[in-house]
Image (cartoon, rainbow, N blue to C red):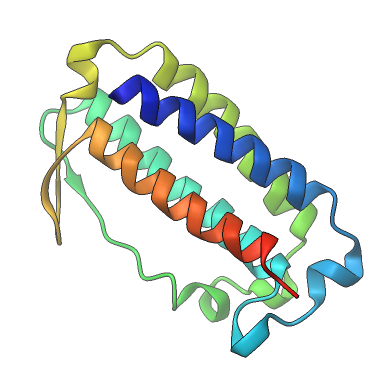
Length: 149
C-alpha cells in the first residue's frame, strides 16, 4: 500500500510541476473562479505545504512519536505574502522538495512506513497515512490548476 501511495505522490508531483511550469505569466496571475486563488497562489501554497509535509516525514523517520504541527492554509496568502512572491521560486521549491522527498521515501523500509507521529488534530498517523494526506492535498490543488477556466 505504501509503495502505491508513493507512486501516486510521484505521478501527481510530476504532473503538478509540468503543468505549473507551462503556464504563462498572464495565466499565473489570472484570478481564480468564484474567488479561488490564482494559479500563482496555488503554486506558492504547494511550496509552503511541501515544507510542512517534508518536516512531518523527517520527524516521523528520525524521532520516536514526534508531535506533528497543524497548518492553516487560509492564513498563508496574507501572512506569507503570496501577492509579492515569485512563482518561479515557489515552483523551484516544489520541484526540489519533491525530488528529495521522493528519494528519501523511496528508500524507506516497511517498518519506516509504519512509524508514527502524533498530529494535534488527527492523533496517531503513520508515515504512510501522512503521505496519503499529502497525495490528497496535491491532487486537490492540481485540480485547481487544471480546472481554471
